[in-house]
Length: 249
Length: 341
Image 1 (spheres, rainbow over the protein chains, first blue to last red):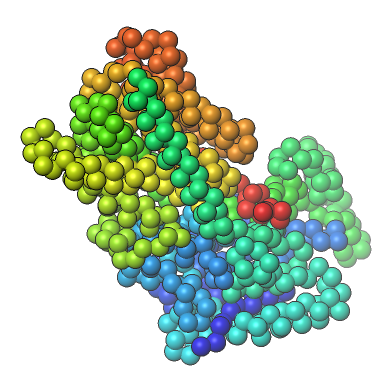
Image 2: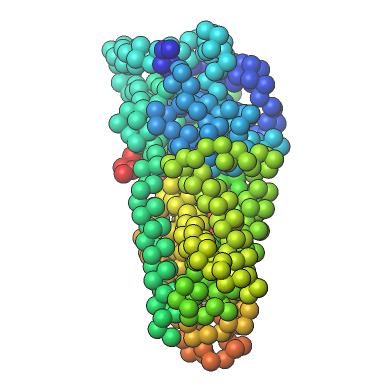
């Protein structure tokens, strides 16, 4: 099976949110109300239990003039995934396409994946009780189809394909943009971080942090050994204190 | 980085203080438009409007991480499980050394009580409680939640067996088995009392990960103090129990102090609820009992107060640390730190 990925090119995104709509329709994701965020024209807010695609509206001054960039955010499908490590039921699995998938018939809603995602993607749906996030349209991929968001994107801002192809395409696109004078175009591909790369690449302009993309996403499991060592030491100290107390008095 | 930063000049440079000024400005725009067919001046930015002048960290200062979704049962479970686990360890030591068989019996009872309540609390927090058994579908050493669920199930069985075998009416022939079960329950109990610190430390939540090494030690100290306190309340105000109480309270003061010094707690301590809970954990749960145990150990009333305060403190500690985690996820700066180790 090919290892697949998304390449989301914010220089092509027009902010139409067709990806959000298509995702909700295909995946039967419940509505999340008509709340106004108040911080920008972005009223979707963030990825969550009922939002698997989220178009960010990044407003700022560029060369003194107001600039508005859109970028469709999605689960990063990490190479080393915090949610997958955290899941105690084995509900969260790595699919044959390299994506990270929550099996809804196994999840018991323990909530540990929610605090283990360095991108704040997965969340527990309060009325349902289980954790939800982007499925990478696992069902569609199994049938040889493109994920719903990539299929409906009218500007091909969301591209889907084999991961190495997309890496090359992203790098080439950055070169093209720079040659055209878009000097601040960058490809977000955190391969050197603790998560070891993602299956969702983003081409953005400027500082990736303005898109809430962590420059160095951290994998919770890297602290597993030191935390358990501490727990072992704590147990020995507690036993020693108890033993001394009973023997000495 | 936040609100105290100076306003960017230019965006809000238009004078909009007085109505007459603004009316005059509208007149001027109309005149200019009529004369030239266009208006050259840049428009006015609406107050607080689309371009935030104080650029917050990240994407409009929105959180990168999700706050914990756990309900009230989880911090209480952390406390009750910790008490039960450490009570089993106390029972094993008191019994195997032969120092205090009566105290060991009541410690087994405390462990049993916690072993019954803990799974109920854990199950009732699950989004799908009927699927609790899915926790036992697999064992994953890389998931502290998986290790914890297995520990809890095994501990509950061991604590129940230890209590039964420790009853006075149990025939003496069962003693070797009781010794084995006591040791098993103690090892599982120590795991149960400390894994919750590992669980928080091995996450993406900034204030927990910054204290990944301290939390197991802190939770162990707090649990040991609360466990011996619960046993004391059965009337075992012995010198040995007091020494354990002193060691535990001192340990909690030490590890909590280290967390406050090096653990990046300044941000979360600005949140009132977190501050009150963590302060209560330190003062009520450790400082007051420590003073009472050191200077009024002969007074049963003082020992009773110290024991009750320690138990209240261990509960505050877990609620405080989980609240602190939630508060720390609202600030995107830690998650966006490019220098993250």
